[in-house]
Amino acid sequence: MRVLILCATLLSVTSEIGAQTLPYARSVVETLSSDEFKGRGYVHDGDKLAADFIKKEFERFGLQPIGGDYYQEFELPINTFPTEVNLSVNGNPLIPGKEFVVTPGSGPLKGSFETISITADDMLSDDRFLKKVREAFAKLVVVQPYDKSDYAKEEQDRLNMIEMFLKYHDDNPILGSIFLSEEPLKWNGSQQQYKRASVEVFADSIDTPINEVELTINPEFIESYKTQNVIGYLEGDNTDSLIVIMAHYDHFGMMGNAIFPGANDNASGTAMMLSLARYFSENKPPYSMVFMAFGGEELGLLGSKYFIQNPTIDLKKIKFMMNFDLAGTGDEGIQVVNGSVYRNEFDRLSELNSENDLLPQVKIRGAACNSDHCFFSEMGIPGFYIYTLGGIRAYHDVYDRYETLPFTEFEDYFKLMTEFIDQL
Ligand SMILES: [Zn+2]
Image (cartoon, rainbow, N blue to C red; front, side, top):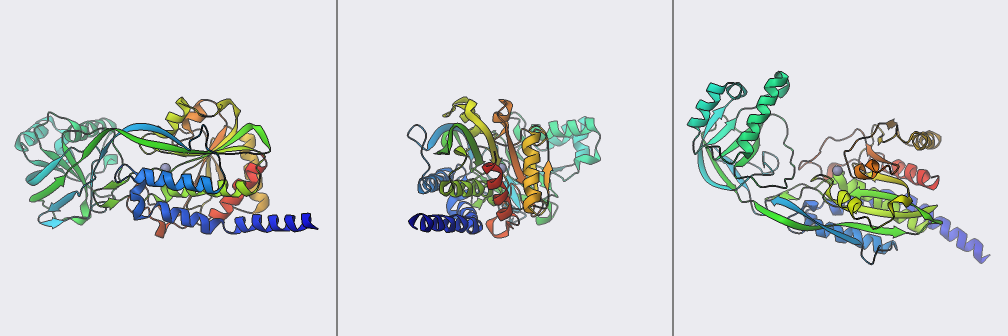
């Protein structure tokens, strides 16, 4: 009788966790992408607050640290914008993040400046370009919007070269550059700081011509910023092989007062990883599992690279790894990177999806070095990188927010992953 009651209790706990997955995942994304977490980057301790949150969840689920510490620390160089960045055009202040962004590697600049306008056609003619650069001495160059696809390959190469010259060349005689864009603005991170100041402006938000510009950019370059991966271990029935679940938790942080929340990229994948840790801590997995929350992904897969170079587990024991990055939509199903490389596992995943009538589509893709699985894959460690398809398009911008993330297929996606892992 007691065994029966125990079983019944366990069953209800198990199904409860299944049913509560979406609310849990939502709360994780809401927390990690809230203002308090500062965009999980390299200003105001954003990365550390996020790592601490993940560590506490690992502890709560009974995951064990490896080698006595959940953290694996590493260092990276980063150009940051911890204080206000301001840009006014013709006396009108622009909204940071939405109407303008600072080029991630920008140097400092403060004051009021005259500008000189330059077009793609100017940039393609030696004479005209040189004349413009001479006129631009101690001014800001405003590059008018143009569509690169309108130009031939050699012209595109030349335009790219001149853009680089304007943004990054220390010896050019201009003070800085303003690139007008007809596309909504995206941001990024830079591991260098250049001498020249540079910004990108959403063309719709200003009146042309630009007569006067007021600018404040006060970047702070940090040579060795200490950040961390967060890693937890969960024992399974078989301890000789490991299943690795990974997701990067970092994002771009803040540009002055503008926060890049990174709800889909990648609070959502972190939520998938934590949801799986939560589930398997109640339902003993077939193999031991290692959960890895990587830092520094957005800057070039730096956390996972550091881990592969300094592994804290025996990499040969990894039976299968799964990387979750962009897990918050799913209106058009999921894309499985490495699907054609590990065809048997892909077919199994696809079958499970049809049998259980879960996602609208499980789409196959070949190898791609586009997220944290990359260095694992390069070592021949089998595994998938999965991302959701369809839904919102916000990506690397201030619009990638919890409030607009649909979580369309999260529950079914989660169910498919637990079934798949159970059958590995
Ligand atoms: Zn990402």
